[in-house]
Structure formats: structure tokens, C-alpha cells
Length: 399
Image (tube, rainbow, N blue to C red; front, side, top):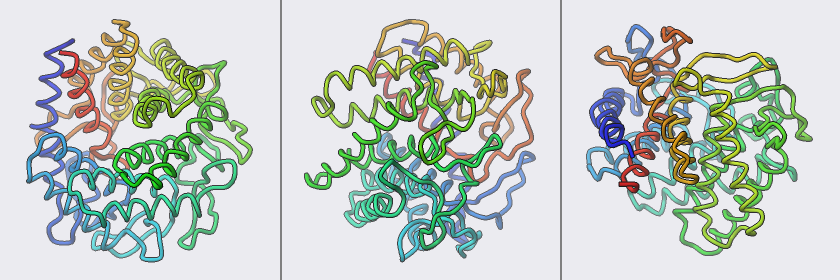
């Protein structure tokens, strides 16, 4: 194991990422500020996205669970209060965004967004132990299962009253998708954590059954076994709409799916099915290593045979976790070497050395950063913060 990498990531978490996100706390209007531009100008009146707030809530709750510092729980409390008071609709569901002072700005209710609220509330429940928090997470679980799916799987965007809405928020690359791999993956992620924290046997079975269904959907409808990738955008019948390798999502899925199986526990999945899915996740890790690991870093995607060589902050973070997970599963040293090389690249190119900043959103293939904001509705402490927690935990267990 690489002791230096472990110590450096601990330092990055404790001395850089945590202090930076603490500095974004809005004590006047609640929650956390929604925009810090590339020039490090803070817009205190920028909209506040529910995905960003959920991810900040999850981050500080997880940080408290891992580190035990009561001050971290207070930051989680602060994020939770804003979510509860301004982002959760009393009629059900969480809005897409609110203004800086908590007025509803975009009332879209997206399945992806509901899932991240469950993820955040589940981790916060681990941190605070309050039953009301778990009840809120379970209410969102019930809502997704009642309002956000059909017999074949999960749908995407809805209006305030859960009428089906065009999925422009999670459709990219020139397509408008009825279903996406991204939403399915993060519902699976949220349900994994919810399953972990629920103790009621009946409810646990309900969540577990949905997890099993999701695993079957990923393997049977989303995963392309011939190309060893997940398809990304679908119509209602799961026909793929575009020839796209999303390398970041594939390596992220490789470890999140393993985590879901581990969390369900031994014997829940049929052994043959489990072996097949475990093979799928390691095949995705190997495929991304072969095609996306270039010059010690991890490129973004490949559409219709053309690489997008942008290096994106969250993709580097998920690749590190995915390759460490693959190393522990297979003991193939090349996976650990890949994680170390990406960390070296990240230190040099992705982490912004300017005082008062965090990580760049993305850099080009020569390592030059784009001028995208340091904080905005999608730029958050979830991916790089989680990378720190996961790598620290996994490497310490290897010592």
C-alpha cells in the first residue's frame, strides 16, 4: 500500500476540502452559498441548488461519522435546516433549486434529486440518530416508488405535482432521454445507504427488493456486455440513444455496485447472479483502464469513437476509488498503480493552489484549467470528499 498517498489524502481532506466548504456557510440566509466563480468572487445572492445542498449535507454528516468532530455535525445541521425549511415541499418531494433566501426558484422534481436527498438524509441520520430524519428519507423512498417510476424502471423529470416533464436537466450530448444510466446509478447509491441505516425488518426488505431490481436493471438493460460499458441515454424501452462511453460513470459504478452487493449481505443475491455482476464491475474497471487512463490521468468520455480528453475533477476522484476497489478485489498491482498516478496528476493539475479555492472543475489535456466556477449547483464536495473518505478507509484496512 502507498502510505504517502494515504497521508497526503488525509491532509487534503482535513486541511483543504473541509475548511473550504466550511467557508461557504451562509449564516444570514441559511444553507451554503451557491456560487464561487473562477476568479474566486463569491456571489452571496446566487441560487441554491438542492443537489448541491444535499451533497454538502451528506459531506459534513459523513465527515462527522468518520472524524467525530462535533463542529462538523453542526455544519450538517445547518445544511439540513435549510433543506427542511426551504427545499422539501410539504406536498412531497424536493425542489430543484431555491433563491439565496429560500424562495422556490425551479419547482422541477427530478428523480435524481430525490435520490440525493435520500442519500444525504440517510448519512445525516447515521450522524444524528434522529428518527424524524430517517422518516423523511423513507418518505422520499415511498415517493420515488409511487411517483417516479413505471413497471420497467425509473423515469426522470416531473413538474411540481409529479406530472411527467422533459428531461433537459440530465440529458446531454444532443439527446433528450426518457431514462438515464445516471439516475438509475444514483437511486441505487441512495437505496444502498438507506438499506444500511434502516433497522425495521419490513422496510429493510422493501428497500432491499428495490436494490435487487436495480441491480437486475443495470446488468440486463443498462450494461452493454459486448462493449463492457454502461449505455448512458435511453428511450422508454431502454434503447440506447447514442454511442457513448462515459468513463467516469463506468468506474464510479464499478465500486458503487460492489458496495450495494456488500451492503445487501451474503446470500441475498443468487450466487450465480452475484458472480456475473462482480465480473461486470471488474470488466468495467479494466475497460476504463485500457481506454481512459492516459498519461497517468483519466479522460472524460468517448462519443462515436472520438475521445473527449478533458480531465474533470469528479472523474479523477471516482477513478481513484474505483481502481483501489479493483485492486483490493483482484490484487492486480496495475490498479493500485493507476490510482496512485491519478492522485499524482490531481495534486499537480486539479487541486487549485490559490488561497480560498478548492479543485478546478476541469483542465484540458495540457493541464490548463477552464474558467468554470469553483462552486456552482453541480460543483460540490461529494466526489472529492467521498474519494478521501473511501481511500483513507480502504488503505488503512490494507495496512
